[in-house]
Image (tube, rainbow, N blue to C red; front, side, top):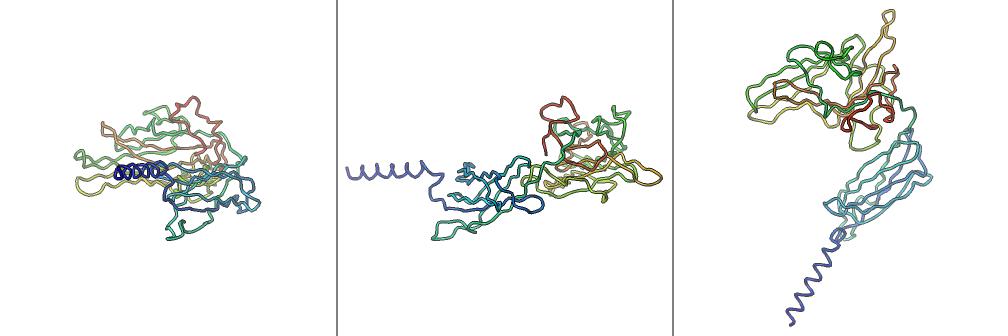
Length: 322
């Protein structure tokens, strides 16, 4: 009888612990979110949502509140060391982020560093404008020919004649292919921007955190490169090589106009995320990228998703702020 009672109590104890396993034996963490604008001034009354992760299934204990006059909001909860957060306020773009605590303070049941201050920048909604904006991940820009420059029109979203209905070549693609087998091949695309003042420049930025409004508010006036190359290179032995970079985006300039031998104006745009390359069964390749083209001849890169100049896009090709 005594053994049966002991076994029963053991089962009850296990059930008690596992029933709240998401919080059992977790240390307490404290964090302060400080919200500022792009000039560094504190933002009061911004809504902060903090999620303290409590297990590997990404279940969270939420804590919500508003920043004080100094832009700060602090919260503490038990967690597994991972904290995610988002900040919103009318008139600003949402910003998100995460913080991972480093160590547990032995004997004190808390995570360290204790109460770190994380600065979050909210970017103001100023002048969003209509743009040609599209995610080509599903529609794919299949390069129609190997070994020949082919122009692509970003407004019509098509190759120029004779390969499509495009009218102006905003850039040219030259596809090189080497294929010796299913695991031994190389596809390389040189992207070239015609015209003296047209070009592209890369920008490194974390696309998974920070403001939902990515890249500079205005395109740079200079620093554009005439060409770039994307590639994938696979060999039977050794690691594959791939040009894709998770944190790479671009700003570009096309359709430049010249007056009396000097630059007058141009059309600017941005590409959120890197330009990716894929292969087709017919031996050609395709490009995938998410682009935003502002046709008003200003350097403004702030897109209004309610005024996309591409009408009736399939849902999978529509884009928001980013």
